[in-house]
Amino acid sequence: MLAVYITLMICTMAPVVALQTGANLSILVWLVFALVIVKAVLLVDHFMEMKHAPLGWRIAAQGWAVVVVAVLAGVHGLQL
Image (tube, rainbow, N blue to C red):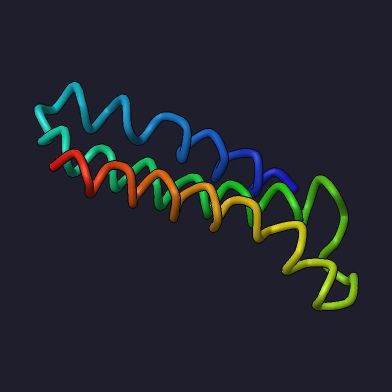
């Protein structure tokens, strides 16, 4: 469980560190999109304790992150 906490903290800190090192804003947007999905998987599997749940329930619980990221990526792509 400690590894999950540390991974979540790294996922939270990574965009801030990338911004401070001068990363391009477009790269930061896609980094945040990817980290949202990683964090959703970790939260559903470990904190909601769905690691051993039937696959359909896990996909339904984790699917919100994919849908949100896809919609935001589409909106972001339209603004480019």
